Image 1 (cartoon, helix red, strand yellow):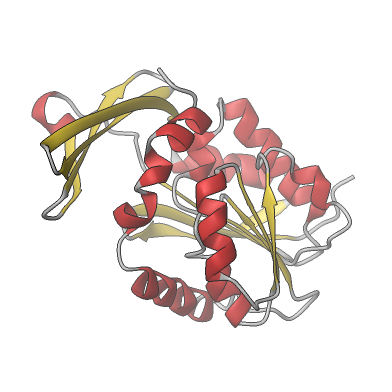
Image 2: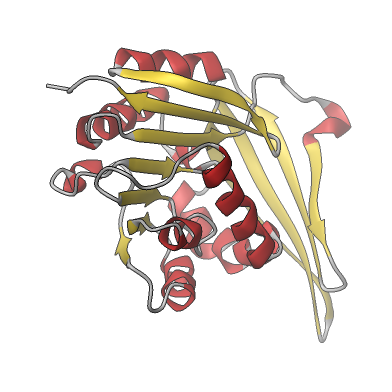
Length: 246
């Protein structure tokens, strides 16, 4: 089984942009989300996008007026992000989201960690350490936006096979196998070339957490949950920092 980085570098990163759908409409959705939930710049006008990918969150953040630092571990996606954000107030960083303390002098008022980026860490302990780091570097009254999938219900049998996306040249199916603390995820891609269909497979682990566990971690680290709901099949949590973390 691959590590998360190996899975992205050797498999998922090659078709991630295709998988996520229409780039313009996905940006527009996030732009509308920022406005609806009043996640607009008003303190330091600085934001961090953890697991930025090719820019679905980064670009709307920059367009509403943030100076953005965008971090990801996949070179291919960062190359796409560079092209997509040309001329914007965005600094692109190749690295691990656990290295959050590198931003200690940046004074962000908003940190976003979207998609399933949070679950790509190695353990619940890693998640808690990341949230502690986020709480440490956010300015007072700064906000955190987290999204992640709800894997609390174990899928069995044929329900484990999730059709993700298909077109005339690609078919992507996700297969889930559940453990108590992890979900083993297999991305099965069938891709058409001049010789016919070719199958490509890679598997990796995601941490399996419940929304109440993440909320408890957030609250232990000096933040208050402002909103928690399901948005586009993702658990979506907005919290704000109400005290200085020592």
